[in-house]
Image 1 (cartoon, rainbow, N blue to C red):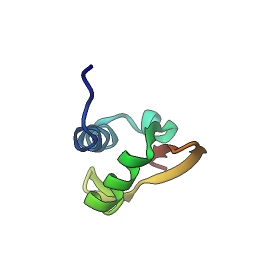
Image 2 (cartoon, rainbow, N blue to C red):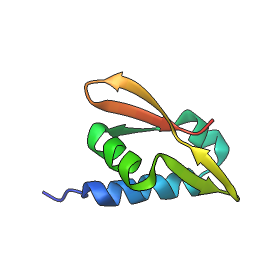
Image 3 (cartoon, rainbow, N blue to C red):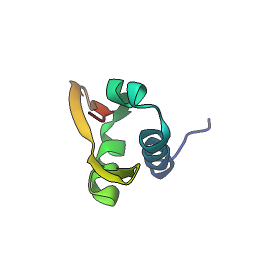
Image 4 (cartoon, rainbow, N blue to C red):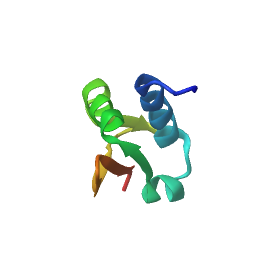
Length: 71
């Protein structure tokens, strides 16, 4: 079984938040708690998009699942 490492998932999430259309990033993406924790540690919960530093918002959906999005 092939699995994607948590580090790769964090990089994919960061890329998606930076490059995706604001319509999609405002709806968010669902991730697990491990990805959220590593994102917050490695990137301090911030990304740079179009020259602005943005803070990623998180909503706990329960069971170790979170939705991350940009406002």
